[in-house]
Length: 116
Image 1: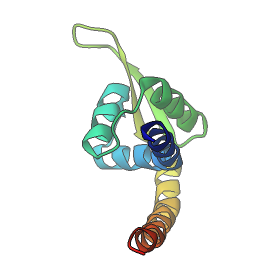
Image 2: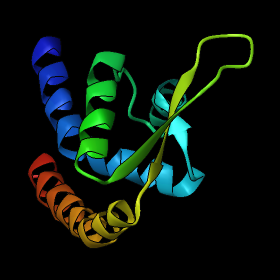
Image 3: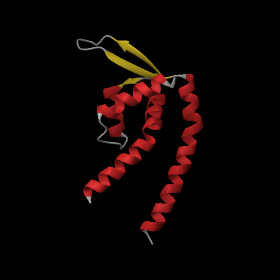
Image 4: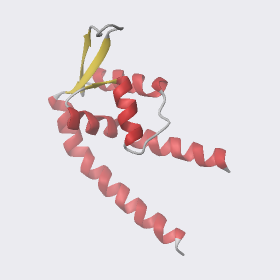
């Protein structure tokens, strides 16, 4: 049963991850992979793997939703920082409210079934 639950939760995360990343970057202005992994976990979306996040960041950048900039590290390796582009902000503004409505409707349906 636990394996089935974990697989379902992974599906939920795939459905919202791109919007969650756009929203986190809208809040902070910019970030790099490790800080985004931490912020996702703090937001209640734990267990995100770097192997999932980094390709997503690169895809969002290739789609023009994020800008990427390499910066020298302070005593360590360089980091690739990401920030929202105007197009990324527009997508978040357009699709974000639709996702929120979808999530609320989904919660309502599931709660009715749980309490039936």
